[in-house]
Image (tube, rainbow, N blue to C red; front, side, top):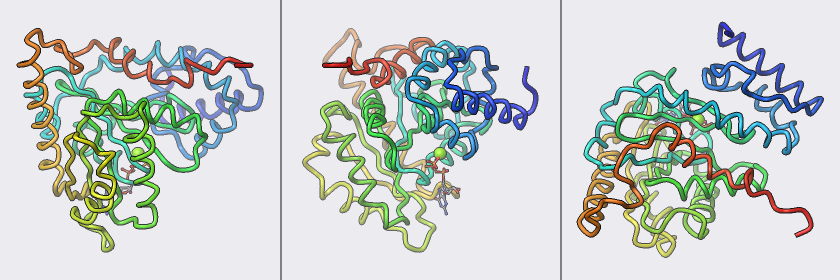
Length: 309
Ligand SMILES: Nc1nc2c(ncn2[C@@H]2O[C@H](COP(=O)(O)OP(=O)(O)OP(=O)(O)O)[C@@H](O)[C@H]2O)c(=O)[nH]1
Ligand SMILES: [Mg+2]
């Protein structure tokens, strides 16, 4: 067993460095699983991982997949927010998506996981950290989008949109410089791309960081993010809430809306389809199923274009 987080981080860094330098293909299963989840990798580790060749990174993937189920079976008790989803049949997967620094991790830590140390942090692709909390009635995942990432990551983004039963788009409402980038990302990968969000997936937009002086309010965010791109929002349920993740202001109202939309939708589906077999499913997936559902989305790993075609 690797002892302290510091020790774990050092070993991970060493390991990544070796891979970066020698392009060695070491099976990840040889590494203590705690290493992968116990700590958000530091900037140093992120930088090192970026030096690793894509083929080598891809070789990690099967090992990650074999480790995840055991991690996910350690479920968390609910929080006030996750319990809002108690009446939603099935087991929705809710994606918290947004540019970096928007407040996704804080939302996860303060409102979706009873203890921050219980959040699973994993690296399905290098440079991307997915945080995951599996509560009794729903699972929540965060994904960073935008920034100067390689194009291939877009496939991953789209897949995350597509596979989610609900998307929470977290915006730093105070950051006016990156509003356009955030909107482009939402539009191009999430809404307009046929491989993006399914047409009925509810979209909750959080205009976060309302406590900061330049924050656009919910109405302004709605005008900029929803009204100006209404054709691509389509008929899906969509709502904007002003939130402050540091204080909790607005969070409960926002997630209550989302939970009620999902509950209503699923009940309607059940009425028209009495067997209850719909996209939301009828039961909570096993950890193995959840892993399969999530990680089949890594299409750029699994469906690499054939050379010469
Ligand atoms: N003032 C203020 N700060 C916030 C709020 N929400 C989040 N923050 C801060 O903004 C910073 C970024 O928040 P994170 O939760 O790390 O954001 P993220 O979206 O997970 O960002 P990355 O992991 O970097 O992609 C942290 O310092 C948070 O404490 C808010 O409502 N108000
Ligand atoms: Mg984060």
